[in-house]
Length: 340
Image (cartoon, rainbow, N blue to C red; front, side, top):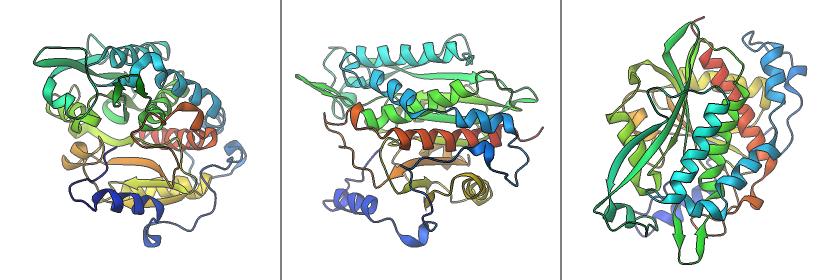
C-alpha cells in the first residue's frame, strides 16, 4: 500500500487518517475486528444464497493457519520479496504451488505473467542487489477456478506479493504489508477448493506494487481475461492488524455492489466499515479507472510497523486475519454465484 508523500505533510496526514477515521464514513461500531465472530451457520440470514454448506465452510477459516502462511512468506528465506529478486521468485513459486494444490489452474500455459522492468526504477523504490542488467524480469502469479455456468464472467481476489527486500543484514519481512493480504487470498482459494461457483474466481498475487503499482498496470494493459467481464474485485493489503474495522475503498460509482457488501456485514458480521473513493495507493486503482467494481479492503487503526524490518509475522493478529478472510470469502461467494 502506498502512503501519500507528495508533500511534506502527506505522511502525517496519512497517519492521522489511519488514527482518526471520519465518523460520517463509517457505521456505528458493533463488533471489533479483533473479536471472535459467532458461528455463522447458527445465524438465520435474509440472504438465501448463503446456505448451510457455505456458512459451515466460512466457520472453518482459522487464523492460526493464515498466520502460518504469513510466517512462510515473511520468513528470512524469502529475503523481503523485492520485485526482481530471488526471494520474490521463491515466494511466487510458493503461491503457485498452493494454487495447484487447491484446484486453482493457470489461465494459460503458466501461472506466471512475466514481464521486465527497468532496474534503476526498481532500485529507486526497493532494495535489489542481484543484477547488473539494465532490466529485471518479474511476474504476476495468476490462477483461476473456473465457473460452471458463466465461466467467462469473473470475480477477482488479489493482493500484492512484493515488499522492500533486504538491505545489508536487515530483512524487510513485510508480514502485514503484504504477506497478510496474500495469505488471506490463498485461504479463500483453499476454502473454495471443492466448491462450484457460477462465475470464475481469479486469484492474483501482484508484483511491483511497492515500485509503483507496476504489476497491476501490466495486467490491465496485457489482460489475460476480458476486463469488461469482471463483475467484482477485492484487493487485500494491510489486513493483519487493525482492531476497529475495515476500510472499503473504491465505492464511487459502485454503490450497488457496496450495498451488497454492507448487507453481508450487517447480517453476519457487524464490523465497522469505513468508506473512501478510489485513489492510487494500491493495486485496485487501474481496475477502478476502467470501470471495474474494484474495492480495496484494509484493516484500519492497526499497530504494525510500516516499511521497516519490524513488520514481522509474530505481530499479526490471528483474529483480524481470520475475520477478514471470512468476510472476503462471503463476498467472493456471493458475487461468484450471481447469474445462476
